[in-house]
Amino acid sequence: MKPSLFREIRKYVKEQGWNIQYEDYNAIRLLFGKADDFKHSKYTLKIQHKIGVSTEDLCVECTWLAHVPINKRVKLATLLSSFNFRLNYGNFRMDPNDGEVCFSVGVDVTEADREDSISLIPFLVTTAQQTFKSQYMTLWEVIE
Image 1 (cartoon, one colour):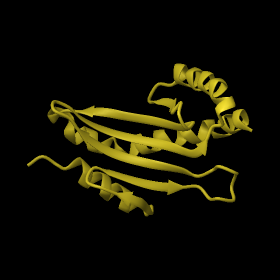
Image 2 (cartoon, rainbow, N blue to C red; image 1 turned 30 degrees about the vertical axis):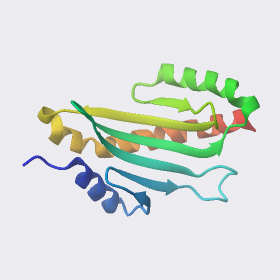
Image 3 (tube, rainbow, N blue to C red; image 1 turned 45 degrees about the vertical axis):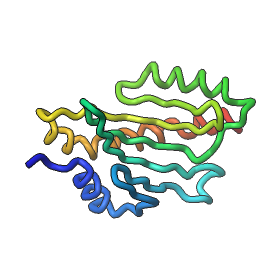
């Protein structure tokens, strides 16, 4: 019997003691940050198991709850592009419609490496959080 990735995701989140903002059949969203840290310090962490026709993906996404003002989006898009150029894992992106900034990292899951993929859950979560946090102040300086 093959292990359920989503069951393992739930188990990992529970072991960390994190509060779940919401959960559905294939994703868990967690809220981090405090309203009084910085003006827009809150971010969500979404851990998702996506099942396609021929592939499965394990994806972790950090979303900054600040929306970049329209007059700052070109400058920030240029900055995100330079971040992405230097990254080994994952990528930053910005929604051009509302200015929402995300960092995503993930892996394709195959039958052969299902067990290894489960063991990558902590790595993906840590990578997403650390990469996002390491660039937070630079992002904030652009939109101030």
